[in-house]
Amino acid sequence: MAGYFELSKSSDGQFKFALKAGNHETILTSELYKTKAAAENGIESVQKNCGDAARYEKKVAANGKHHFNLKAANHQIIGSSQMYASEASCDGGIESVKTNGKSTTVKDSTA
Image (cartoon, rainbow, N blue to C red):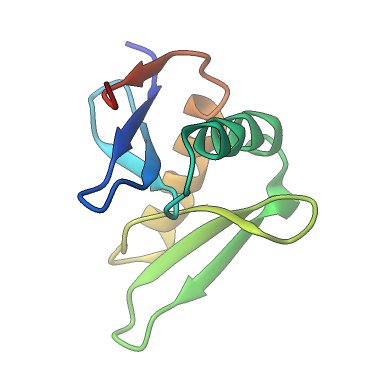
C-alpha cells in the first residue's frame, strides 16, 4: 500500500499533517498551522521537496537518538521525523519519506 498524508486539527483549533507509510506508521510530522490552507501548502511542499537529498537535515539529540527535518528551499522546516536509535534507521526513515512523500492521497479528518 502506498503512503498518504493525514490532515488533522489539534485540540486548540490549529491544523497539522502527518506523512504515513503504507503500513500506517507516521514517518514525518508537521508543525502547527493557523489555517487549513497553510497546512495543505505544507503538504504540497513535502511533495515538491521530498526527493531532494539536500533538503534533509540530520541531527543527533542530546540523548544520542537520531532524527531529521525536511526543509523547503527557503530553509523553513516542513516536517520532522521521530527519534531513531541509530543513524542507519534514521537513513531508512529519510528513504521512506522520499518514497512516500510524493503521494497525492490526503485523508482529511478535520471535518
